[in-house]
Length: 101
Image 1 (cartoon, one colour):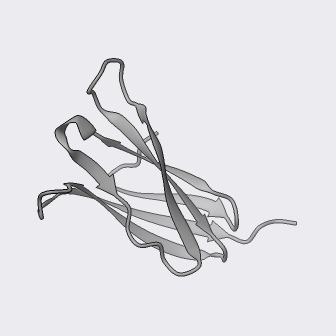
Image 2 (image 1 turned 180 degrees about the vertical axis):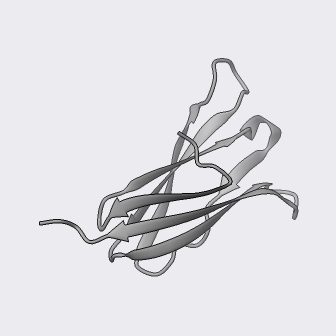
């Protein structure tokens, strides 16, 4: 399920979390991930269609992984590469717990 405007997720150290954001790349508007906080990674994967048809919305998939427990804040931006204007932002807080043995 795509994340809401201000949302949170929980996870465990070393376990990737999927972040889904809906965009319309046919219009040029796509989500950009923030710089990964220290001790974390954010990878962009292929998008999946959000509805049937060509040129419609897609769910962009990002994978977040943390090497240490803590609370991490990510601010994703929806924009077109050729415009300086940010069309929308998604504020995401991720609480990462220590891995259980």
